Image (cartoon, rainbow, N blue to C red; front, top):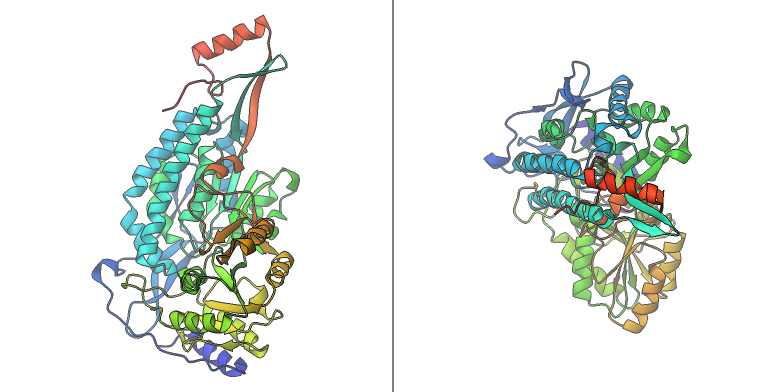
Amino acid sequence: MKNHFAFYLLFFNQRTSLFCKTQFMKNTFKEIPNEYKITSLVNQNTYLVAGELKVWKGATAEVHSTISSTEEYKPTLLGTVPDLTGEEALEALNAASKAYGRGQGLWPTMKVEGRIAAMEKFVVQMKTKRAAIVKLLMWEIGKTLPDSEKEFDRTVEYIYDTIEDYKQMDRDSAKFQKNSGVHAHIRRGPLGVVLCLGPYNYPLNETFALLIPALIMGNTTVFKPAKHGVLLLSPLLEAFQTSFPAGVVNIIYGRGRTLATPIMKTGLVDVLALIGNSTSANAIQANHPQKNRLRLVLGLEAKNPGIVLSDADLDLAINECISGATSFNGQRCTALKILYVHEDIVAEFNKRFAEKVDNLKFGNPWENDAKLTPLPEPGKPAYIQELIDDAVLKGAKVINRRGGETTENYIFPAVLYPVSKDSRVFEEEQFGPVIPIVSFKNIQEPLDDMAASNYGQQVSVFGSEVKTLAPLIDTLVNLVCRVNLNSAAQRGPDVYPFTGRKDSAVATLSVHDALRSFSIRTFLAAKDTEYNNAILKELLDKKTSNFISTDYIL
């Protein structure tokens, strides 16, 4: 049965597709393997506040998957989550604020070893939930089985790497310095209460890339999961509850603006940690009455270009560009969202690139070799079709045979060429399966476009002539924050800096940098006098201070 969305999509395409013909194709139902079937609903009826899993008896929101469980297409009900109000949001904020205690709480004053022990306890429990979380990743957001497993395993690795980096930070600071007759013991301390808002495309990994470093540095948190990928946090609620002191981690469910707005208006939030888009980030922080006191840790949009030079290895460039543009259906801030190809090779590039895109397999996440999977947002195919229609209206053509084929939960990647610079797909972060291609004669053309763009996260450059690459790299590093040589844009490895210029990011996320983004340098200073030195010696000998420590953590 076609749902109302499919009907709307057909109507929309008939009305607006002036230069291209959209084909609506029914999904071919394939029996779901038993281990991946939805046999019971996840009816999440609790939320975590002040160390208590509180039962919610109010309104709930249904969570659906765009993946169908039946031959006759319809979305699959996965479960429900609480639809909390501003009152519950403030309850969570007050719990976090109380746990921080203006810096006097148990968690921010705890010894480093104590916070590490809590984090290690959590990750041990987390690993027991791998199968459940991987299954929900596939159903909730349509991520392939290998990528879902990778996201879980990568997150566990991230936590352990963060613990090790925190240990090294403590080792490096386990000493006194002396300058100009003053002793100093310099460490990093927490900032306060963190409001953490994660993304739907990496609801575990990127969410934890905010949450984990914030926690281990001694901050307390209020965390709201993304709309899509919300249920996969359910298996971890008890682990959060039992691993951390009451109020340190508070997890609430509901509409972002409904919950975030009253929280921010209090002025009690010290750090806004968000991975999403700049519009949301601006709207949320605008509610804070003392913005100068608000630390921002943001991962935002990107319009990462791929630049294919005339001397590029075409096989390599095409394979990397396909991976970069279509991995997880292009729903990554690190995806290649526009391709610049030199005019001398653009015809050959387009021919081979389009053929390879058409050969990509669409299927459910658990199917072998499925590279394209159902889109989690029901309205995303219609949005992508709008971009295609607009580009075609302004002179582009869909150059791959299958481009724009639509099913109830997907639209096949459309390769567009030549794309006009006044088209929407040239300007917008499409965050889905459409690939615009622009040819260039002079390398200054893409450079000027990048300089004028609102975004500046990454770029991928494909070429071999060092004399050409050297000055190009020297310019690109000042336009974006990561230049990928003959490889697709990506976030990892997580030990490398992850950030961006302009509207793409605020602060730096990586294992090493995130610990610093969620902390501040603080220190004890004492003049080098006999009186002070005796006190310092006693403080060190008796080990009565959690801050003053020269112990070496193994």
